[in-house]
Length: 230
Image (cartoon, rainbow, N blue to C red):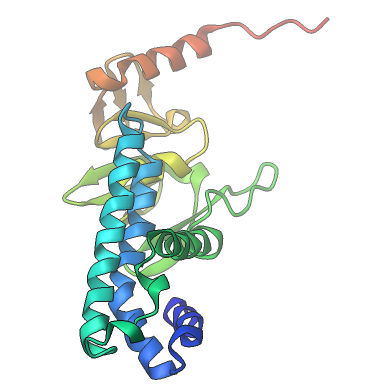
């Protein structure tokens, strides 16, 4: 779908669908890099995240220009006058990259929660073993990151996914809590919860120093008495 849309877009510049399709194949790596680099960038909380965004723009432009140079050789046969000047315009290339990044986020990216009926399942979309599935978050006990994949441990079943734990953390609603670089827990299903560890039936998860403040803040919130109604 993305390739076809890009080919139709470039056909107006080249006048030939075949040449446009070949150009799209050469420029597609830049689109793929931009889409997934932006996803990673959005999940960053570093003070240098805007500097990283600047580098992202430069590197995406570098990848696209490599594709344009290759097209200059194979499609335009080193005839500079036949090369549409817009293809070497960085603003145009960034607009195209941003357009397809928007399309991915709008129509292809997984949504945080797809259904939330009162007192019913809290459905969560996930790609597991190349299949898009829905899990009930009310049954999700904890998430474990291991060997470049995450494992979602439910009450009755486990599901592996290639989605990064930072991206899962971004999509999960409260009360899910990151307690370690490799663990996100559901405190509602924990058998024991303290400032240093969380107990489940099959695991004891240590709270790392980096996430200790989050756990303490959550415990303090639980200890506060509810406000009296006037």
